[in-house]
Length: 410
Image (cartoon, rainbow, N blue to C red):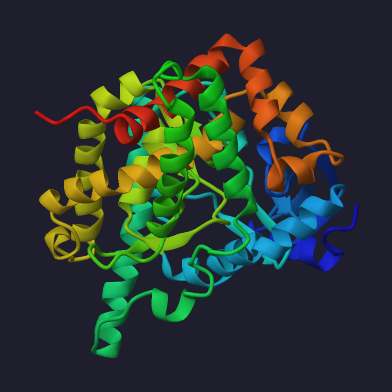
């Protein structure tokens, strides 16, 4: 495997303080499902320096190597290029912090189609199980890290505004990489259609008069509005938003005597918009309805508190960015994005990893599932897996309850 040259390998070792590389080896992850939009590989460097010898454990992300269609598709959508620009340019202006203030793994080497990071799994970080929702403590830690990430957008913009003597926004320099394409929406359209087809089979409201007609006439417009919400907000202060914070993009380290800590990864779908799209979708991707109904107010408080602390540490008043009343209003307005985005993602991630690999990592069917139809596959999984059916049906029925047959407010 020749993804990196010898000189590139040596430069990585030097970043870690070692001037001699004895040997290196690559190891594939056995779990294919950890990388939906790229290949993930382990890299081990046996190194020496300052009288010490040890093995560096690294994590490598690259373009898909064995699925030609998926590689071309990712290239067309610009996902790798987005992340390349974030990691190699914009994030150089963002402080990553140390200890509990750290929000992403350290980047050690980058070129256009290959990113090398520290492998934080050796420090005890793990991905939550994708077919399960998250606990309160896990999600609280995720919200704290999310707030630290968002704070860096504001800190950078305020600092650069002072330097320039005028208001500066990240959008000025990075709009090309921070917007959602309004064309090439095949994946979204396919997911929307799958959600609609699923509802017609499994919704508890399917016996309502004209149910199918209401689904066909109302639901597509909801997804269109969700797409529109991904544009920069004219109402709220924007930030760089991850927008894809489901379990595979969250790494959790659990401690015995202190709360868990979270790092976030995979910045290939970033946009510049209201940061509450991240908070609401993080909650919708990773909770049951019962949990989010109970926890959401707490998480809004946690988010505001940590955002305030991070901004204050840089001499910025949080109310100049987003006051608490606006925060709650912005959350409610972001809900449509969160629930429609979850309707696209949850039916894929809620299945077991074995089932996900069998369906979505088959080169013969990957094109059809991504850009033509995946309705029958999701309907069939629900037929076989009661846990999957319960989680997906509950989420999609919330769309019906909120937007198709809403109860009159009292």
